[in-house]
Image (cartoon, rainbow, N blue to C red; front, side):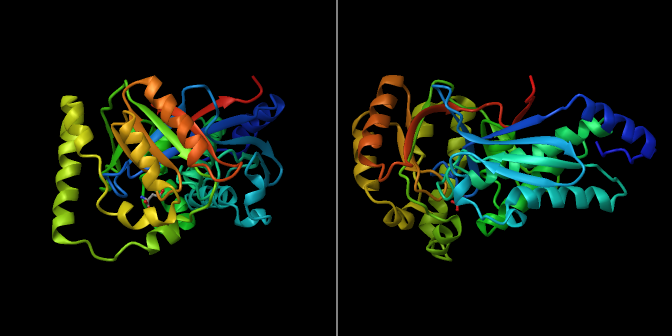
Length: 345
Ligand code: HSE
């Protein structure tokens, strides 16, 4: 549904004033995500949610203001550029306003506050979480001003991919799509279908351990070969097709046997100290699969029981983490994706 054009400045201002008088602050949350899931380079992604309630994702607060401003808070705020003009949230706002402005829709300004909870260059979809929280927040916030959402889900996801691509160096939806939509998503990248939501194994636990070092996605893409061999191409295609079929038929054993990475892991693991030892421990202690989350350094292990997941998480905490910014969480898939709530409530 397209936004209706602003018919009357007076009506609009009335809505705005009501919202201002209510002092409304909307908070958007966008979860961490794992790109690739080993077997689906750039094509598969999953949203993650720690089972202990830890907030693993970014939040953006929005409130009406006379002019745009951005405040950056949170554990990883100091890792972002000091110049807020270059912050991705500012870029999201400017882009959002411009696209609507080009259609003749004039909107009042907002003050945005980014709570940067996710580490940058972690492989947990940190830039995607900021982009998704900002754009989903803007869409829902201005829906309250306009009376309907400015962009539908498909249009917004396109914008999310474009904006996230400005940070990671190329457009790939395997973080923004699961982060926005939730669950496990497969990229279709067609004009009317960008991403598909896949069935999952509800009893799986996903251990996600961030080592604390930084790996830039752009650099981790640079080290990949520009060509893929014929045998690897065939294996990649077979694995992805069989995995999706196994998900639909809930054939866990077959699905798990497809979860290997022929595209990126052989090259990227050299960037990750203790990767091989971590895989060995995880697989010897009941993990069904183990791999690099996105472009790393976060690694993930899939388990079908909580005790094993906790044991692997603890071992990774003690052996894979390299400094005090690292962490390890036992997660399940975040089926909701991005959400908004009234921050005043
Ligand atoms: N698919 C991307 C990559 C995800 O592996 O480069 C980055 O998080």
